[in-house]
Length: 445
Image: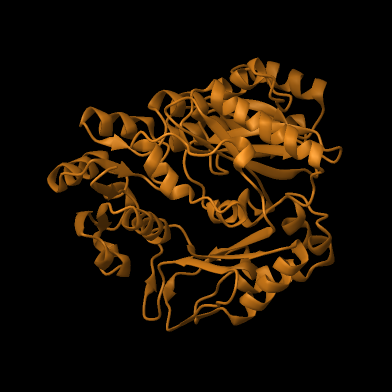
């Protein structure tokens, strides 16, 4: 096992990694921007190193500064968390070239699966269903219009190197398609340094269902069942749960096996997530594979009892998985609400500011992952998520009731948060029935 790990992230995921390291007897080094200088979790680390000013481009996204901090602190490995550099193959290469282990998959797997077009081609090879698409990037707008007319509108324009819900445009007719293609390419080039885009048939009224994967360096790959992430706004998740209320057992088994098959074909190790769309007829199609730990990993930890962060560390250190697929059991139902500093009544506008009152819920089967406290100021520079509230109960109905009680207890003031919208969603008959899709929130509110 590693003796010292650098955590190349901030906020709740930095604290989550820190805790996993401590339980394994690993010393920790946290990096921070000048804006995060007073973050409370820094005091829990064995060492904290400032890597630059507040803007992420000058700190958390600076590969050279993070590597320099790792070398100064003499660490064995770097954990990237999620976001920032977590899916950056160049960063993974820089770590390993500096004789520092990158806690994640190989850069080859990251490049293969991070390129949506290459990932789709691999999926086709191993018989994982793809959404109908252009079978490659579209460079000729006339050919793009011809393809869209053949498959039928609406269609999606997607950035080949996109991810995290970015680089996606829904178009409903040819005029909009022709207008949007140049803008989509420019947006992709600016955001991902790759202008390539492709078209994909829009699957309407679909569920977003993802499968948690663990793989090791010894060729073992297992799935930890699925999470339903259909509660979204602007392609960003608000609520996740497991099991998915929209799957029957046969579909669940086929979908989970397909995810494991794709990961194995990519030579994947570490934690990863394979995302699918599931239509009304329970046909599933590959969306993408995220080559990192997900924000919503606690949902899977609650229903399987497997510590995903600790296994990321163990796998990176060369350990083989100590369980096989038949050993993994799914118990009960878990739900996670992402608590964001946003105003849901004004199009989820970010609401940074000082928190003067912070009181979190508790009780049996309740988990709160947060780095926030009373007196803290939420910065406008970083992601607006400030806490994750997770509950686990024997049944989905009991989990919903528990989550409703916890949301009523949760006080974060005076800034606006998504808690009121979470309450409304959980009380809605359609959500309680499990009869929802990715457009539910935008249609309803």
